[in-house]
Image 1 (tube, rainbow, N blue to C red):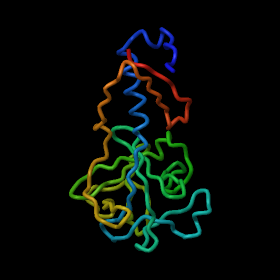
Image 2 (cartoon, rainbow, N blue to C red):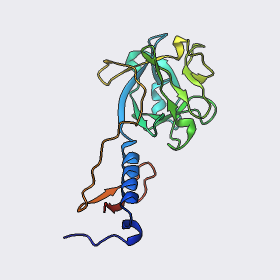
Image 3 (cartoon, rainbow, N blue to C red):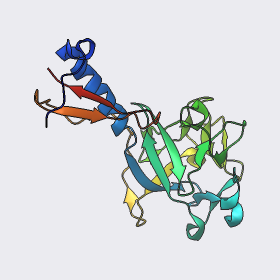
Image 4 (cartoon, one colour):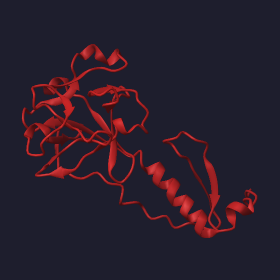
Length: 203
């Protein structure tokens, strides 16, 4: 059974529908994830909870820890430049309160968004809101004004099996190509905003 034609204000322009499809597809792809461990270049320690029981807390403190206590982080891309870093407990790395913590802040907050530029085989982790670097220069894990030359502000990435990953800039520039079929309806949902899905047909 074919669905009835869409209202004219939606279907009147093929270019409009195609642009909308690409936009919504981009939003959907933005939650594509990479699962990684973050290892500090200077100390060879990993990012984890300061106290293992902290997982039950709303905003557990973080520290650089040994490999046995390391936390897996999921990279959620949100645009061409910035990502979210979320752990298995659903806590986002953020500086919303002025200091580094893991918490359940909205994904739209700049305090929870990070840039991961690559340099010299390592990545920097730079906050979008304040421009601070994730580092352990002072002997503790913190987000503060950093120096790109510091090894304490440089991070290696490992996959879920502990294999070293090549440092890279995380980007959303490589979108798949969508060739719409005029006889097909496409349903897309803005999963970041958790909004109602919309139905489009390219004409």
